[in-house]
Length: 86
Image (cartoon, rainbow, N blue to C red; front, side, top):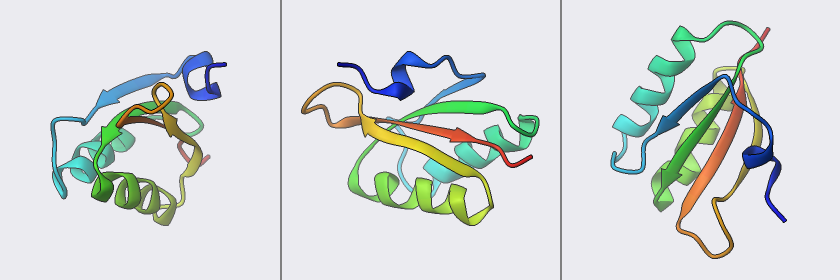
């Protein structure tokens, strides 16, 4: 069964799997600044620091973290789904 982050269509997509902190959140924040209130984004990320820091930073800014799940069972790449605050 696929996770809901893959099933639901997002308004924006961002792949930060090749980036390291702090660039992972810098790129995420730049994306958020381009988004309208209530829009969604799906972000591909990997690595311990981004998995911990990016969702926490998104939530700290007041946006909603909808889902964080492996791209596929046992994968090291995760999909983070966020919604900007209204």
